[in-house]
Length: 209
Image 1 (cartoon, rainbow, N blue to C red):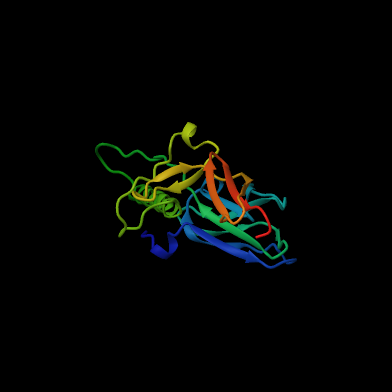
Image 2 (image 1 turned 120 degrees about the vertical axis):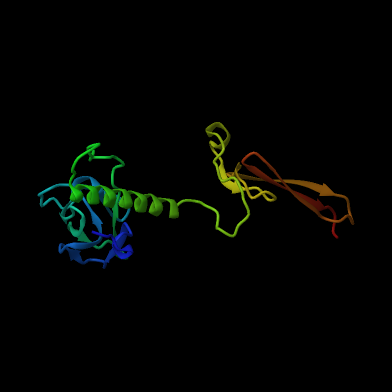
């Protein structure tokens, strides 16, 4: 069989309104093969565990697959503001069929193997599209993260000239220092950053004016 693009986007989400309990199946519009390994379900960001046949509301069951679409069944009660159910496909990267070097072989197995490879590529494309990346019309830049020792305790930033990814300090502490300026002098102010601390220095004129 061929896999239509509409049946090969390996991600879909559903909304459950606040206070509403949904137990009817959530359709899976993309093809998959093995329910226990290919399908992942998240409710409000928390993963649920697969079970072939259970009524446990914290788990889910799957129908369909074997190269076709299907459905997920799990019980969800909408939290405050509503809940989101996300269903994704993540097919293990493996080759399960080996063909003989000569003689006849089963065309059906070949088609299944090719379908599986295409879905693996689609899964990877879905993951890559959600990663930090450059636009096609952007200039080249390095988005590789700095080493652990260089990024620990810092935040991700981008160099002001090259646009490369870099680890920068994030402000966790603020301090203020004051000093006096002579009578009639102008008030002064400056700011400096050292590590995770930013310091404001204020010069305050003395006297009545």
